[in-house]
Length: 73
Image 1: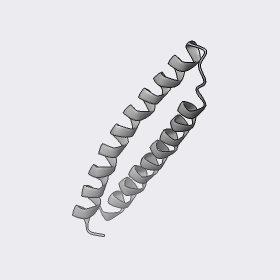
Image 2: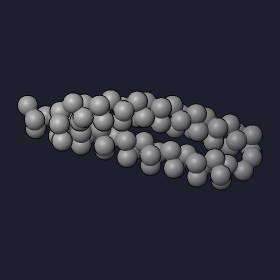
Image 3: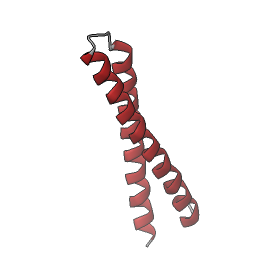
């Protein structure tokens, strides 16, 4: 894949990564608030798990793209 394309993909993944970090932080706060109030946090915890999985995917993809870009140098 051309360097320019890889750099663009990495830029997009990093933007998604930043947004997902915010999502995970927001969802953790929601879970904490629900638990502190003694409310059912089952759905919020499931959403947190999904957000953490998505975050892990973006981290892995960013690392893969970094390695691929480094191999072109």
